[in-house]
Image (tube, rainbow, N blue to C red; front, side):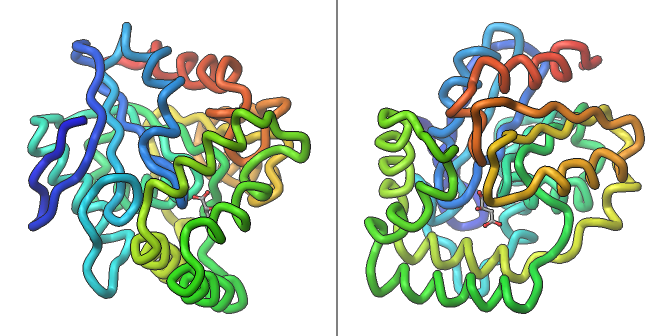
Length: 263
Ligand code: MLT
């Protein structure tokens, strides 16, 4: 996989397909761009698909102290400059959705379309951000095996496919404890994106796994209502990661938006 020199570090990324229609995929916590393998395979005949690993997750360089989603969005912008990409349809899942909101605030002209998947607009409550701090500390003490034990049951539907469990564990353990801790702390500090919803003017789909136990479907409904003209697609037989648990239905929902967009 290629690496791009970005803001004093190196970002690992996937870049597949030759179309002028670009799709940018923003992954979930604590995974990496490998979670999009089925989407890349399905979309790259009609689109050029770019997916990066955030610093500290997957194989990108480490984040500095005080890491934020604002800085992460600046990494994404530098990567797009490096790749000479000015316009893209963007899909963000969970933490990738938080990042998509930040990117939209910084660079609304980038967006040809937007897919917000298993994510939410609101910021953390004080209690949620305290839980993230505890998670970050325990990650440093106990490592990525503990992170996988904690996260996998939350990320997948109640009766997960054993092969998917194995795949998600491996996506998690490819990262670094310090990177996972930094990502948690960055999410804890993220601002409320609810006011951003009304500013989104590109075609948008909200996608949610019907069995997502991390982010309730009510959050998807709120985003649909808040973004003018947005559609909502619910994915059956899937928890928080419908891209892995029901890729055919998930890919259809993405393609329904992305295939119809002007360049
Ligand atoms: C994710 O899937 O990206 C995270 O679980 C989101 C979160 O912790 O809020």
